[in-house]
Structures are given as C-alpha cells and as structure tokens.
Picture 1: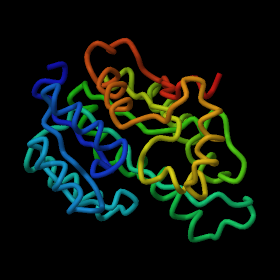
Picture 2: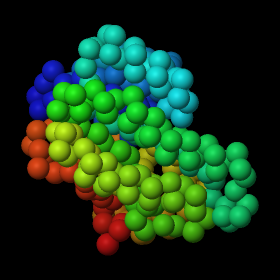
Picture 3: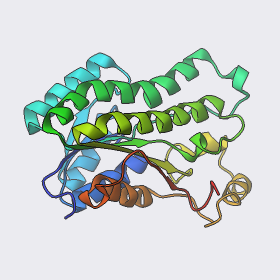
Length: 246
C-alpha cells in the first residue's frame, strides 16, 4: 500500500501503458482518476479498479480547466499527476509529415504537459507536496529515422521534466519521467508502420532483453517513482527499455 490515500490522475488511462499504471496505483492504495478522451474506455478501467473516470481532451485548455475543476470539486486535492497521454505520427520522411499530424503530436505530447502544469502545479505548490510523472520515450534519447517529430516531442518532455524538477523542488514537488521502449499497446503498429512477424523480429533485435515493454512494466516503474520510496529522486528520465538505449 505504498500509495495509500493518495489521489492520482493518470491521463490516457483508458489504454496502453495508462492501464498498467492505473491498475498498479489502485493495488497500492491510491484513489485513481482515469482521465481519457475516450470516456467509455476510461469507465471500463475505472470500474475494474474502483476508480473514477473523467473525460478530458488534454490538448485543449478549456477541457483541461473543466477537468481540474471536477477533480478538485470531487477529491479536494491531487497528490500525483501522471502525464501519460500521447500520440505519434506514422513513420515517414520528416518533410512529408502533414501539418495536421505535426500539430496533433505536439498538442497531445507537449502542450498537454504545459496545460496540466497550469491547472495543477499551483495546488501542489500551496500544499508543499506532490509528484508529477511525465511519459517520455526512448525515442527522445535514441531517435529512430522517420519518426522525427515524435522523437522531438519526447526529447522536449525529457528537458521539460528536468527543468520542472529544478524549479519545483524548493516547493516540495518532485518531477520525473519514464522512457519506455515500444510496447504492446495500440501505438505499436503506428511505430512500426505495419505489424508483421518480420518487422517485429527486426524491432525486437534492437532490445537486448528481447521483448517489448508491457503496461505492467510501466506501472511498476511509475509506482516506485511516485511513492515516498523515491523521495530523493527528481529530474530523472528512467529508461524502461530492456537495454535498448545502451
């Protein structure tokens, strides 16, 4: 029960790595807010873990403001904020990615963290406590060709995490990030371009441990970084990648 009585938000909690994080947090005693643009998926996960589902578009300022108001109205506080929601563009030469795809990637992967900070950091600062966990990627450390703007967005997340950590440390707020390698999530096919045994084998050959990351892997790592066991850890981007970045 490492997160007993903590109120935790997990954006993108209705799918992929978000499910693993929500499940682990619930098992460890947290009151979990499953935040997702897909309300039906959020409700399904929330019902399974006795959490609360709230619909939100993390890239939209009005939606995020309304979301934060609902959170504070119902829970009165927030202890943990996991900025997990993310998207990618399909593999393509960097100059051929459309403006619409570029904007979507930057809005969901980057702007959402800015909007979350605007809505929840003042509360954490006033409480002199809180933990923020941002979902970055090995793509921000060891970029792969043809995912240029996705890579760049995750590099931004890593830098933002470090500067947030330095600025917020005097206020009792810790900020870290996770760098997963591609996992068994809905985004896997998008990363690979197409899902075939040959492409999977080629992709897996770059991961020394020899498998994709799982939602459970990310849930375990997130739980540690958001617990008091990690009270001296801030500003890191922990690789959960089976050795991919070595």
